[in-house]
Length: 605
Image (cartoon, rainbow, N blue to C red; front, side, top):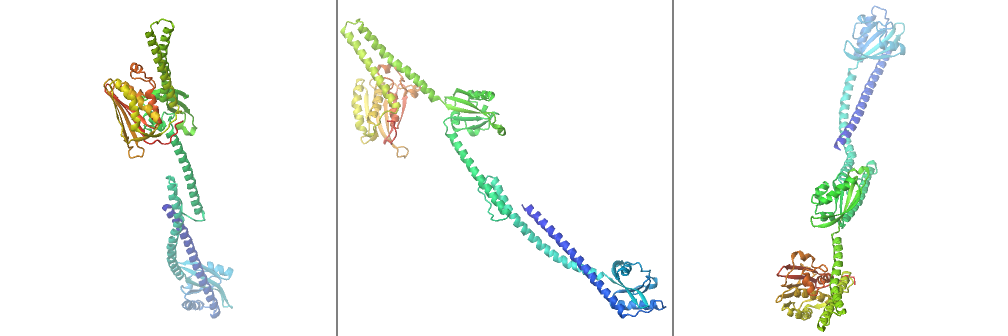
């Protein structure tokens, strides 16, 4: 902008300088011409005065040249001008500076011709004698019969030239002063014109650097003010559009980040353009690292990259499932969708969008449902076969011994009881899983609560000579559904006694815990036994329906295989957690954490 200001100042100064120079030349010319014209008029008056006052003797006499020469010398002293007397035929009969007899004929001099034609002649020419510019003025003069010719006066223009020079000096000094003043004024004017433009330029540059809060603070009604208003309006519009774009981007990013399904967008050139958070988690990758690189960088997922390659090559939609082993083993459903974009978006053209869905839980539930049907069928088949076999034996009359008959009938009764328990547990588990069970929360004194459980379980424990120990503080209270809690701990204690050898020990402890300074305190229950323990490979599955670690012993104890599954769901209904720690041959510990106070939750009842 400084260059523009300097250039504008230079242009203004050039125009002012040329204007002042032209004005000076015009003034000097006018001054010189007016001075010469004034001098010429004075010379004309002097000639006419001379014509009136002077005597003009006969020009043909012997003394005529001498007379007119003397008179010219006298007049020169008076008028300070060269005086020349010229006859009508052009002969000089008197001159104040030269010998008339040696002078050439003046009939064709310019001033003489003009005087003959106009009655007055004047001219300026350089004198070869004096080497100066001279002003010649001639008038026709006639004095009776004695003189008929011209009187010519000539003066040097040296004084005029000196006056012009002095005028140039004075005017030059004045013009220089005026030029300096004009330069200062021009610079200030240029600065006044360019300063708002500089402000506008700075704001425009800030806007170009995405600083849309920048505004031009100029309040004028001229074109610069209108330009400032236009810049501010543009900034307002850009700010509004940017806010809309950012809101849309934030909304889109929020949608992408909170999607449960993964998204991987690959361009036609094979570069990964977009990866959302779910895809990062499923594939164990970092979007910042992988974005912009080839999909072949997903080397740990060979099946996935192979599907991507086939999809990009065929440009056809597909729906496939593949096993992924990193970061955890899972089953991923992959939907490939061809992305067709406009020509101007060439980097995205003919790419593919890959939608990833973790279906591991779905497939696991399907497998569990299938196993559940098989397990139910198997669990029902065994007692039904026993009931049917012994009933057919009795109906066939093959058993005549009353003692054997009663033994068969007892077996039929036990198996029917087992069927009844199995069906009851299945119905109970179904109600719990479907959230159709009613939860009646009430304050529970845990010491008294476990005393009642101890009375029921102690008889069973004593039959196996198993020590049953309860360690529950007297002052401990909590809120819960007493019947459901009884069902939880009856199942756990029953399992602990069943899977503990004779002479073993089962212990239940309850302790109040604090949740890292939070108000949500909870009670930790630990049911620990010294039984056979659970292999590590079975620990993740012990809460599944019909899953048994020791199938033969479970059936022998009359268990249905649904107890721990029911316990897990009842703990969830109390908004608690359950986990198990076990070592084979040493024993197991079931650890349950339940909140002291139950919040108001919709249990689906």
